[in-house]
Amino acid sequence: MPAFAEYADHDAVGLAERIRRRAVSAAEVVEAALARIAAVNPAINAVVDLFADEARAAADGPLSDGPLAGVPFLLKDLNIQYAGHRTTNGSRFWSEHRAVKDSTVMERYRRAGLVTLGFTNTAELGLACETAPAAHGPTRNPWALARSAGGSSGGAAAAVAAGLVPAAHATDGGGSIRIPASNCGVFGLKPTRGRNPYGPDLGEGWNGLSVHHAITRSVRDSAALLDITHGPAPGDPYAAPPFEGRFIDAVRVDPQPLRVAFQTVDHEGRAIDPACAEAVRSAAALLSELGHRVEEARPRADGGAMKWATRIIVAANVANVLRLRAEALGRSLREDDVEPITWLWAGESRRWSSDDLARAIWTIHGLARELGRFFERYDVLLTSTFAAPPLLLGTVDMQSRDLDAFYEDLRRYSAFTSLYNCTGVPAASVPFAWEARGPIGVQIAGRFGADATVLALSAQIERARPWQHRRPTPPA
Image 1 (tube, one colour):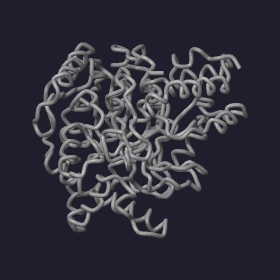
Image 2: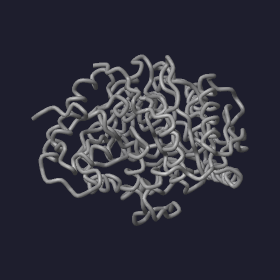
Image 3: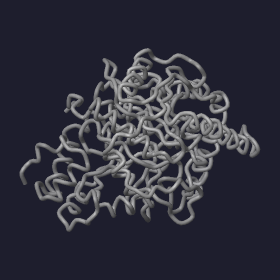
Image 4: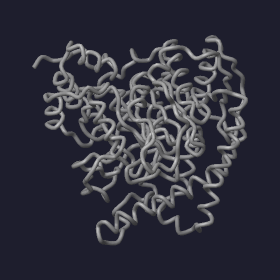
């Protein structure tokens, strides 16, 4: 079979178009993806489970008439079920778990014709802004191997940045799509709460903080994937405002002039890395040049209350899933089943009462009210995605036995992302600057349900400051 040398030059939409026109076969595209994984993955450790024979059989067989038929795709090894396959959640405790059915989003990926190649690496239970689980080892940033790809969808972002696939599934409960997208110089959208379903068995993740979507090479790929997956499923506890059009159409035209607020300090007023602050100022200047009304302003978000509330919500949910897993295994949870931070975080749930959890949920809903009022004055809020360029591996370490110090570091670096999980609004990380430590993303957030606006503005930035020509040197 001839090599498809141009594989890495195309995004998912572009590959699907070429396959449809028979300029290249799905089998050639999948073979190119598998070759790329074989050459590059040993250096970055983005893919932790590979289904090469199954992918080849799917590409050789009759393709669906879905919009992304034949396009190689990867799943994050967390909170998604792919019938017959193991999902470890980045943990030794789930090493023998096999799915008996598909998640709803997986069903929709299949209908779209995506060819699933395997699973990508994740922090255990998605609990860190770094991807270095004991179960699978660290994922390295393709731009600088000593640095973090971000987390918890670090494997997905590294795979897309290194050209293994044009797009990969990811989840986001506190920044886990946007942080690795920023660190790896690719695009990542966290959609509105309820835009994508969490079913068929689960109603939500982390009391509504977590969502499914993807990390992509281009904005139009993110829009195309959202067109495939969005929409309610039976029993969903939340409903995003309905969207009747196509998200991919929204990214093809520039948005009307928007009221843009920007901030260069975090939600507690603390300074961030100067390179990140400068990226925000530069992006604000670009948006002004593009005709938007831009001014410096930030919402009155109580960072301390948000920190307290999310810590309790995550502790309660971690304790719950570990208990359910132990019950499924028919034994008690042992400390050595999970990483030190996971053990401590689950144990911390015993410090809090049921009314503390109820108050924590009230707190995040209060933040949503405050942000909702802010978005009556502004259409979007522009910030840095992460508070620093990519960190050295081990900076936010789940092998730590000091939960307070770990959580403080986690919150300090991910200060800009968690607010939008608490409030449920859409937010995207757009690649914007590059320096010696690696890429820097800026984040665009919009009002609840305004996914199309966030995507359209991101696409406008992509046209004005394209990033797809920027590639890390292959570390093969």
